[in-house]
Length: 148
Image (tube, rainbow, N blue to C red):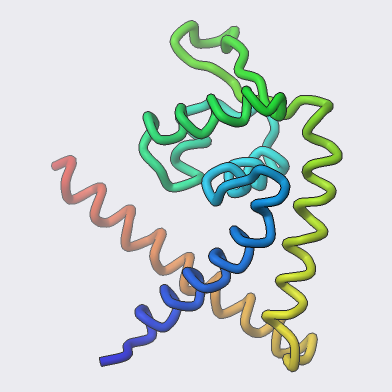
């Protein structure tokens, strides 16, 4: 049985595999390039928020951040508002790596979307955003039901 959910999961898995293979020469694993992508959008984010955005448990993110720190690409700093929290920042050394990473990811995106018109790509993005909103609503309903 091939459902839409299974097809989407397969698509994402294959796309990530392509990116993983292409980003290996930069020393980036899947968890590292995804984390860097999120930091590029929200540098200085709280570590526990970053874990949620990346979609991993906090201990898994800690291991990823340890590796990125060893590469000199990120640094963790204490949060002035919450002494238990840490904020994660990209370092200046991350700039060239992010530029190369973006080049690889853009190339993959172009190849994956080859043959689709700009209008089709916009419509696909619109539908994905709609599905995301539906899932967020379902998630809020589930959270509300489990906290009662």
